[in-house]
Length: 484
Figure 1 (spheres, one colour):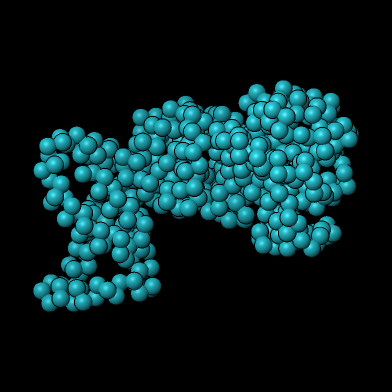
Figure 2 (cartoon, helix red, strand yellow):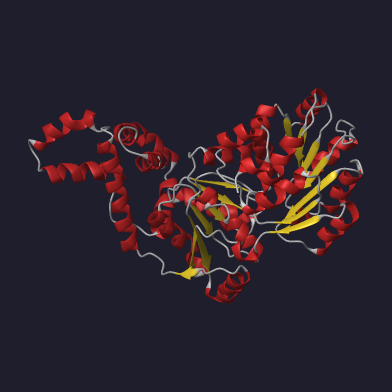
C-alpha cells in the first residue's frame, strides 16, 4: 500500500515526500483510514512503529483553522512533546497548521502568548496542560481530536488523574485516540469511560523487535562494567550511541567516568534543568557528543537519526523496557546494534526478556586489549584513507619531503601517527582512569610553572588535530588540553 491510496490532500502528500516517508508502516496502514473516518482508536504499538505519523497525518488532514486548538496530544515527557510537535508541524506545514509544544521547565508566559494568538494543535505534558487549563489560558472547548500517546508510561508516572481531568474539559463528541505499548487495566478503564466503541489495533507481537537490530549480550562482573563498556566503545567505534542506566546516580557516574577516560559523553535525566537537557540533546543530535548516557524516562520516545548503537549498561527491568530502549537504533530501515551488559546472576532474567520479546540475543566474548589495538589500527587506516582520498593532506607534502631526506618514509609516517594518535599500546580503562586522576592531582604551582610550555605543545598538536584529522584526532587533542 502507498500513501497515495489514502486519498490525502496535495499539501499533505508534498510534506510526506519532503520528510522522506516512502511507504506506510503496518500501524499506519491500519489506523490512518479509521482515524480519517472518525473512529476512536486503541492502538497497541511499540516505539519505532511510526505511530506518530499514524495520528499526525489524519490530524493534519482534518485540521480546521481557528483560534482555539482543533487537536490536543498528550505526551509523558518534555522531550517527546517537542519531538511529536515538530513532526506534526512538518506534516502540516503546507496546510499552514500551527503547532505548539507545552511543557514544564520553561517559560509559561511565552506559551500563553502563543495560545492567545491562536494555535491549531497543542502537544503537551499533562502537568503543563493542567496548569494552562487552571489559568484559563487554554481552552479545549473546540477540540475535535484528543490523542493520549504512550499511555502506559503516563500511568507509571502518575498522570492518569490528570488525563481524566483533561478529557472532561473537551467536548463529548470528540474523537479519542489512545496509543500504548501495553494495555494494563487502568488504561482499559479510561477506554471504557471516555471512548466510543473504540477500534482495537494491535501491532504483530512477533515483530516487537525490529529485525534490522543486531542484539548481543556480554557477561561481566559488576566491578568490571566500566572497563567492559570502554573496550566495546573502542572496538565498535559507534557514530552515535545511547547508554541506558537504571538510576540518575548511575547516569552521572557512568557519564563522568567515560569523560575521564577520554570519551565525548553527555548525560540527561529528570533532575537536570530543561535548558541543560536541551543543550545536551542538541549537541548529541549535532554530533558534538558521541555518547548519550540516560535513564529510560529521559530518553523515552526520542527519535534521533543515525544512532548506531544502544548499550544497556544495566539490564532492563522487563520486555517492554528492553524493546523501548533498543528501538532507539535501527530507525527508518537502517541497521543498528543493541548491546546488553549482564552480571552472572542476571542471566536468567535476560533469557526471560528474550522469551517474552520473542527474539534472540546472541552471547559474545568481551573484546580483549589486543582486539582494541587492532580496532584502533583499522580506524586509523580508515581515517588516513579518507584524508588522502579527499586530498586534505596536500599542505603537509612539502614537510614530508623535507623529512624524507633524513629519515625512512615509514618512520616519518609512523611518527606522524604517533603525534596524532598517541601510543598505540592500549591501556586498560582502569589505567587510563588512574592516569587522568593523577593528572588532575597536579598542584596549582606545578600547573602555573608548566602552563607556558604546555601551551606550545598543545599549539603544535593542534596543527595536526585541527587540520587533516577527523573527530578522533580532534577529540584526543581536546582531552590533551583538559589534562593541563
